Amino acid sequence: MHEKIIDLRSDTVTKPSAAMRRAMAEAEVGDDVYIEDPTVNRLQSRAAEIFGREAGLFVPSGSMGNLTCIMAQASRGQEVICEAAGHIYNYEMAAMSAIGGVLPRVVPAEDGIMTWEQIAPAIREKAYYRPQTALVALENTHNMAGGTVYPTRLGHKICDQAHEAGLKVHLDGARVFNAAVHLGENVAEMTKKFDSVQFCLSKGLGAPIGSMIVGSRDFIERCRVIRKTLGGGMRQVGVIAAAGLVALEEGPKRLHIDHDNAKILAEGLAKIARIRISPEKVQTNIVIFDLGETGLTSKQFLERLAQRKVLGGPVDARRIRMVTHLDVDRNDIEQALKIIGEVVVAGF
Ligand code: TLP
Image (cartoon, rainbow, N blue to C red):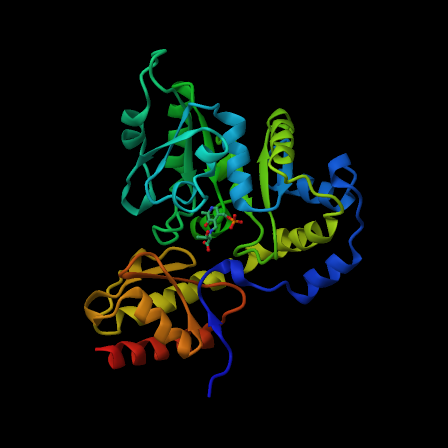
């Protein structure tokens, strides 16, 4: 009997490694609200260095990182252009509006990848009696489109055109290192034209908590004020930043394994009758598939899988998301595929 729970709900579920726990136990700490935590300061400088920016800021979550960047660049009553299936629009508690007073203006795009031609018509005319567009927000990789990757040239073009139109551009780069591994490029080059970048330490990179914002020194100082306003001023948080440093140095090196496992999962799913998926579309560590003709709803399917110790998450009533990460290996994927096949056959 296979006892391990194979948790494919998200890459957020990973537990800190032994090296991370050691680093956490030994971390030098201070009060970060006084900017005196040496470990946090080291993490922030290292993140800035990796992204070729002047400064970085440690935040408790990706959601707070995105909200902070939005509030630093869009005022109450202004608009942010974002993709219709994007995380900031669908999974961040409408915080940009509820807290920031900013309105999302959504643009649906195939595979979650917006082009400038789709963005341009959503920009408001400059008129005092209309809300004004302040910001464009991209998501790379795009989570709910199945971990899709922005071609770097397209990201650069959107930034150039947006700047010409007087807009700022934010990158929700929660999984930007997955995008970099897929493209074989480095994150500094990929993101250099964005005004702000948020990336997560707590997803594929494996840290238990935390995200980073990187940008200009002036921008980061404004973000520090907003972070405090949001209740995100933390104290001896070097104990967490220490795990973040390990994640930042070690995490990116092994993401290709997650991508290979996602491919194996997608190809295996494609062989299961009645499930619909295009494995060639899987670029990184996220696999989304349609229950197609299985006759099962997402809820039924996930409940039956959970009884067999395999966990996934729903995208909607018919689609399932599974995410590979450092706590699942190739054997787990093969075991998950076997169980999914049996659940589908039994359900029909
Ligand atoms: N994504 C989570 C869920 O909220 C859906 C996940 O399991 O994938 N941007 C993107 C693109 C994200 O995928 C997430 C988290 C966030 C931002 C927010 O990060 P946290 O959870 O740290 O607030």
